[in-house]
Image (cartoon, rainbow, N blue to C red; front, side, top):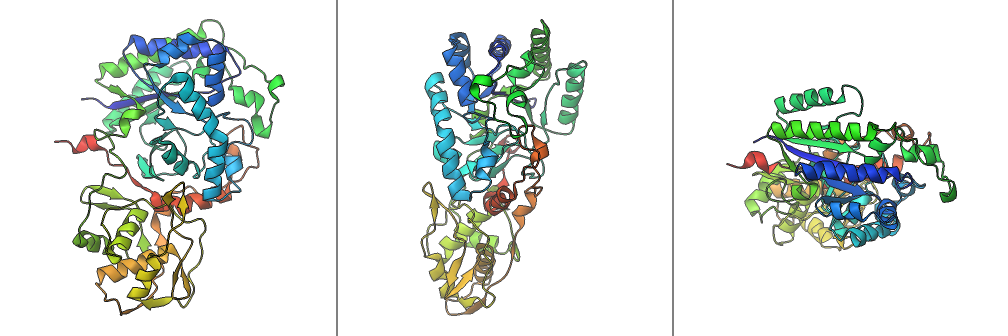
Length: 457
């Protein structure tokens, strides 16, 4: 059996009507080959398709997979811009307020469920993830360099995420693009890649410039009445490049590849579900505790992948005599230092764990600090201390000094705060230090996604 191929499109140009024709031609190309892909729509784009009476497009879409790509894409403030000054919980509420309307329109107009989300341009934000979970959107598929977990798929915030993987590629719309794409695909397969992610924008086939670079570049917010259409390709070029993409699809099919949709990824045959871990035993929890010392990280245990917060939830359940079923807990809002003299008996730590955790959309979130006796204890230090207590099987009355540690999974978060150069729509001097700090705090939820294909036997 050949590699699995994801073919997905960001459908976004709501200004240039000719991009609708490119979308229809791509749908025809795929339908003629019996290939399904995923079309991630901007809310304004699906409204434009509907208002322009393109029933031909809507009918063709019924045989494909649908994703969401924000409501207005590049209008300012973009997702990153409005989330940057906000905390995790507040930013999530703002994202839901601004973007829920576009999602509702997408579902209403297409009549189809939404399988995935991806950020517009480089407008990534960690506050998006709990909203996707609330909306029941199980995956985040796009291309960005914010999180690199060894160039493999991962779970973050309870969402299956494919954004920085080795197998991402495309056939460029240029001379020799097809030949180069074939060579790139063959190289990836020869290196053992089983999942190939290929992406396009329908507007690329119809225009020579991106619509948002024309209207919203470097922080500009062109009023709707002054929106400008992008420059079109020469006659015949759109069909030429769509035919070339069709030839590339034919090549992949000839290699035994199977085209799958993003909606299929979040199932037992591929990456499973984030909460599929079984109930563990007390011995399992003690074994996990032995894996942590001063660095806490995700854990791979008996074929299961557990985020740092899921392991923490097991430690809490172990010490509070609760069911040993791992639970995802979001990271805290802030990084608060542990009081220098913090210490207590084992039962003091047990009592601190009994306090109610904050919530975001009904999902548990770690507090900024635990109170042990009267001292503040950072969640990371709390986790290290709990691991020590459990590993050493300490009694309730035994005295414990708080152990200081670090959240090792933060090493996978890109810390470059200069985002202005990542996307032509951002202001040139745009920086995102708060987004990075929030992303690092949510590394509590990061863990590898285990590819089930290779485990079948």
